[in-house]
Length: 242
Image (tube, rainbow, N blue to C red):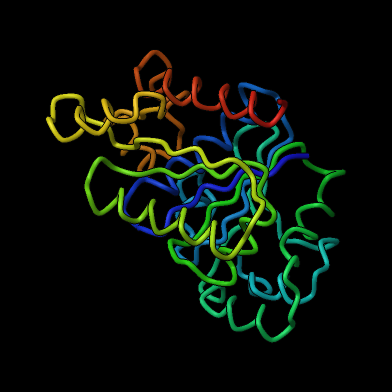
């Protein structure tokens, strides 16, 4: 079992959309038993796959208990793909983790799911916090979606500084230009500076996922966006298996 974190300290960069697509690609393209674990209190990743917040115990309760036997996992319309939904209780996750003093609680929870899943995709909140540090410790690969803006690049620099200063050894970091528009000079310049970073094109078919709850690989399988998602996931798999 491998864990992929989709994380950036800046919001509005397409993080949840990318996490949902990577989870779908894992289940569909690689035929992996996949869990999208939504850790963002907004619950965007699960929503995009047609899963709303659950009405049972709060999501933060599972972080506190450390018990994965009765996780409120929800099946999706897509084979091999489940979602562990988020809710607003995750806003207090940092205080909870600080209280219980377990630095590797999330890593142990993901490891305990190894018999059920081959891949776990973490949709992470856009903050630097105790929860984000636990996510980094649990992740085998850290995918960082960002736009071509200077603010987004600055956020990436903050993330890399935090990794160097506070977390030591961690999984490889993979920046990805999300919402990339080759018609814009700033985007072209950013890509020329980092030509090895994957790109996900800005496309209306990606945005429509929020309406139809279908990944672009289903709604527009021959589109450039669908091809970019497939290629990105193939590259992530190579990193996980390398």
